[in-house]
Image 1 (tube, rainbow, N blue to C red):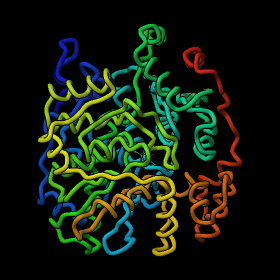
Image 2 (image 1 turned 90 degrees about the vertical axis):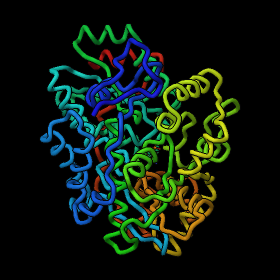
Image 3 (image 1 turned 135 degrees about the vertical axis):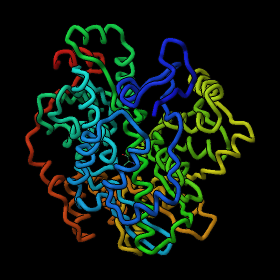
Image 4 (image 1 turned 60 degrees about the vertical axis):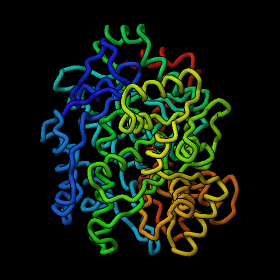
Length: 490
Ligand SMILES: *Cc1c(COP(=O)(O)O)cnc(C)c1O
């Protein structure tokens, strides 16, 4: 199946591309994105067929319905990485918290956050495309904490790929920083910058658009790509776990096949929620997709009022930093799917030029037929963490906690919710320790130990080990020097 463009064609890009082309150059005409030309219709037959399949069998069949230009052996070795998750038989456990609440845990991979769900297989797929073309790629990543470790982990020692990963020095948790600066492989460069996440992200965008940087790379026979979440190579792997989680509820005898559920997603760049939307369109029985946000509540306002307005907004730092985002990139794919390319181009240009757009009343109604939304502030989130732990002995991270608020306010019907948990407690331990015990400003290692004691949970080895590992990446520079540092590494 081929991929087409969300903002129409500008006559300098091909109007249709293959999956591999969409992965290697993810930006389409007019700054748009690639989307599948059509979605496979899976229907109840597919769900019945896979009622007793394991995760990889389900994934393989779903991917095959997309008819992408990736060899089956490559898909097999990409999916084999799920064997290294905590439980090879079930990389995504779905845990009952109370009668209507089930948590789908997406964090059982090597870096303990849900970015592994897509980036693990994506690393193999991208490296194999590069090898087949006999080309070398530089992958740029800018991270506020979870994408960086997951991207480094997946591309470590892979052929034909080098990674330069930018993070704001002092802007991530200790665990997240250690996950990056202890990575030791010749093809990885980790760069701390004196600035915040926006500075890192802006530097990345500048480099991706810079002709002089690209021609400098060309002399070294290197092409440029990015591993950010608009890449469809990541999105495709984020459809699978929504189907898997539903089938888990059927297997656990909690829903009958065909019975509708809520999907409740803690959202930032909207990749996770988009995967749920595609799964629903492909036939998954979903009542509504509930979008949970933190104080950076642009998605709540879009879905409730039809307005995307950034004119008076700046990013608010919160206790759920992976969702501290104002321009939520994958919303564009929803706009395209519902309103077509011409309207998407109009809305996205308005957002880029005027920092603002408004949907018409019928457009808003189409959005609200599928989505509902609410946001949760830091104090409310901590209360959900504490109460859920005390009442149900279930420990969750601050991103997951935002979904509990949205569930309380958005679930009009008495049906089951699948809440997606995007990070393990170990990644955001100071906030969780504060929620459980009241201790303030603890360092990660102190907070990890106190949660471990209160909740009687062991600290996983891969987290504990970080504190004794040698720091191999110690570049910390001014943001003006990023290009120089990357070229020196290559
Ligand atoms: C990336 C991330 C999110 C947001 O996911 P999107 O797909 O960007 O909406 C939520 N929680 C955690 C912990 C994350 O790392």
